Image 1 (cartoon, one colour):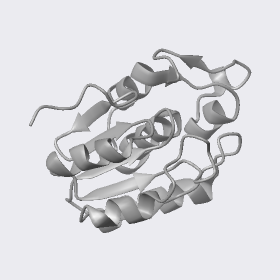
Image 2 (cartoon, helix red, strand yellow):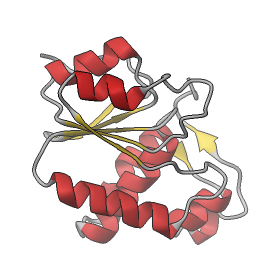
Image 3 (cartoon, one colour):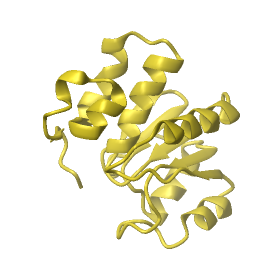
Length: 159
């Protein structure tokens, strides 16, 4: 099956990792048909675009679900450590990571690829910059000192 085109800010990172903004119930089923085995959600369940019970929806489709609620205005090292632990437990399984618009996720995946996997900075940053250029606390979170005093700049509209 080809990658879906109707997900908000969909990105395929590699053969086992995809990312996006908030998927719908129908899109969760599409993920399963793509062979996704695990879903990690970095958004808050209280967000207006969040699904009513995403954990149950994902479980009903036979996928595992991990929720790491990351406050958009205050990402922490504890959040990142939780993300790294979840990815480590998943191992070689196929995983889809999402938040509301793929901003949190793209920053987390960037740091993971750079800091944990040891990927080249420019290569790791490519997927991040397809979504946005973080400013403020997110620039601090990813270690971009030059962006700390700048506003966020979204390449793709925040859908």
